View 1 (tube, rainbow, N blue to C red):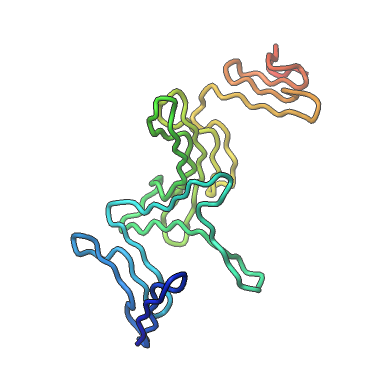
View 2 (cartoon, one colour):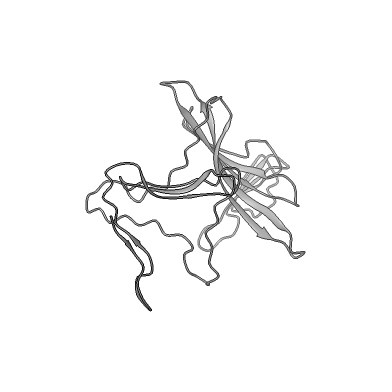
Length: 200
């Protein structure tokens, strides 16, 4: 086994164990629970228990986290996986989310947007997912704008039937296609105020 501490401007810590299995490096938290481990097979595990793992920097236009894959084959990689390892999966249950939080002009941390998955069907052999896009409005709970349904192969806009307009601009015309949710009207090249169920 090898343990190395080296000098100025050089390697300051090194471990080269000859173990063929088990953890070769491990750190426990104050309660004695393992927080980080490096296994002899190359697996690295971080477990914050009920807390969070934070990776941060303060540079502009610089990646805070990079996942790099150097394999030369044509198979997918790198892969970012969200694994909901629940003992009781159920239809319509949440299964993972990407959440965007920012500070408002009062300095408060607030959620502004979320992309998350749900179980459409958790049955063995009939697994189906739904991907949901939400934005926060007026400080309230996220408003759903779009949903991708794996069960029926459907792209659904405005699932909750709220006052959300649909706009399609061309390269030289704003509101070329405009669906007015509040009046149940669709306009084509008539601006943002169609005057009939279908106004062309």
